[in-house]
Every structure is written in structure tokens, then in C-alpha cells.
Image 1 (spheres, rainbow, N blue to C red):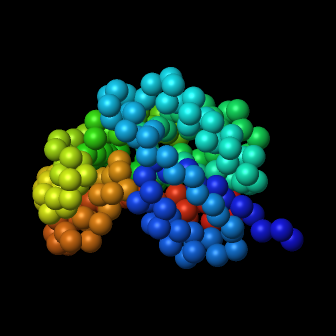
Image 2: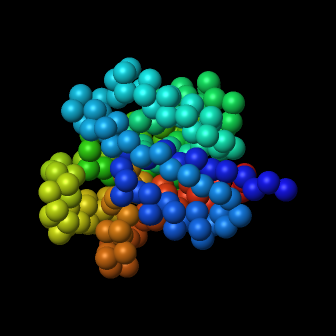
Length: 219
């Protein structure tokens, strides 16, 4: 039987090896290919939101992945999530936005949900998705959002220590206030490993692993 093929669409080439390892570990019998276009996230950051021209290009990448033979498509950037949902309605194969399994897991885990991001363009769509998934599940939740302003710029300019310190401080604060914490960006996940157990009183969820684990159940 021909193996299933997963097409991955990224807005940063840095995520290609991250998902390559996850797919190797959790989807050993699935073939994969990658489409990376960092101009998408640059457009979102420059405009402060997801614009229609950028959304159309996201839909174009999804169509290209389908034409390339993908049986399933994963888009690994939360900031373009709404465009992914529109593209999914037009595609003939399933299309998953990377943060949906994470949002569902958060809703299942607790009522008080914290969301942390280093970009406002990611914070808002992630919080919106969690609220909509809670409504779909028939659950009432309370969201607490934290923006680590300046952390993303620090990361882009190579100051990983500043980025990690800002994210760690926000995680410590939120862990005292909520039942579960959602990382709106995969780039923050590595900070969790450096936290003391006392600073991780609430479960901390990151999208890459949860998304690929979900795909393992459907592929």
C-alpha cells in the first residue's frame, strides 16, 4: 500500500528540522515534504495583522501542496491560522492549523487558560481559536493573555538569553494564576525545559508535538 504523504507549510525555515524530527519519531511510515516562505510572517508583522493578499498566498501554498501529492497538509504558523481555515474549506484533502490540537487539549485540561506570545499578531489569533474551540466543546473558559513585548526582536537579533528570560518570567507569573498555559509560538517551547518544577505548577502546552501526535491518530 502506498504510504501517506504529509505536506508541511512553514513561515520559517528554522521549523523544518523541528518538524522533521517530530515526524521521524511519531510518523515513521509517512512521507513528508516542506514548503517554507518567511515572507508570509514578515508581511503579517509589517502590517500588524493578516491581510487579504497574504491570506491568498497562504491559500496558494496549500493548493500547491495538494497538487504536489499531499494526502494531508499541516501549516505550522499560528499567525496565519485564519487563512489556513479558509484554505481548508477549499482543499480536497484535510488541512490542519498547527495550534488546533493544542487549543483542544487546553480546553480539556482546565477552565482558566493562559496564553503567552512574543508577537501580538500571534497572541490574538491563538486566543480567538481557543475561545472558539471551547464554544464548540460546550465549555466556558477564562483566558489570560501575556505578551512578552520585545522578546521576538531579541530572538531575531540573536539575543536568545534576553528572549528566554522574558518568556520564563511570564511563564512563572502565569503558572500561579491559571490551570494550563498555551505557548502561542513554537519558538518558546525550549524555555520550558529550563524552568524549575516549582515554576511549572500548571501544564505548559506547545503546538508542534501535539499537532504531530494528532496526525499520528489520523494518518
